Length: 191
Image 1 (spheres, rainbow, N blue to C red):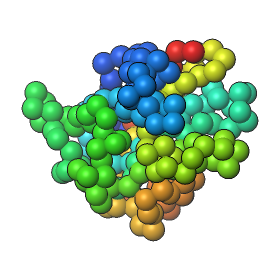
Image 2 (image 1 turned 90 degrees about the vertical axis):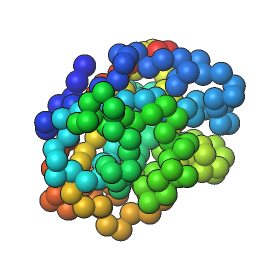
Image 3 (image 1 turned 30 degrees about the horizontal axis):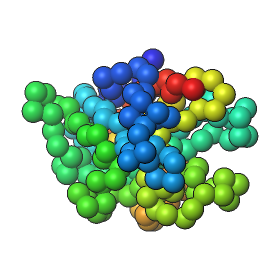
Image 4 (image 1 turned 135 degrees about the vertical axis):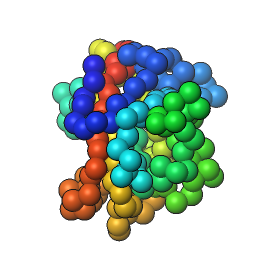
């Protein structure tokens, strides 16, 4: 299923999140019991005016379970030029496996926000590897549909720092009036 709001096309090689990025990840691919290896995806047909990428990966199906949409991963101010282009298609960007954990060393100017593990209602540790990186799907009740929404701007979003909250990202995107492109992808996380 594809959420499409611009010319950008966001794709993955799966429609169901593979085990290694989700609930059945092995112990060495977890932080405090939570899957931490982010899945790969590709961004194609990106508007040439886009110089920065921003995204959210969330679980709207978590609302009946915990009372809010679970935030699994947020990224802001990722320079397009810093991301490897797909050699098979010079108009496509490939976000590699485990990008969330590698991002701070690879592209320090890019930002990752807090996920729902940082919530005071969850009671997890305050380890940045857990609360400000990718948290893989672990639906407790049934299969859930997860949404990856990506936005592209010509300038970085101002006044965001490492560990920002999703609402701050959304407010900055709304206020900047510079969203040049957007796209999304919906995938299933198995219970």
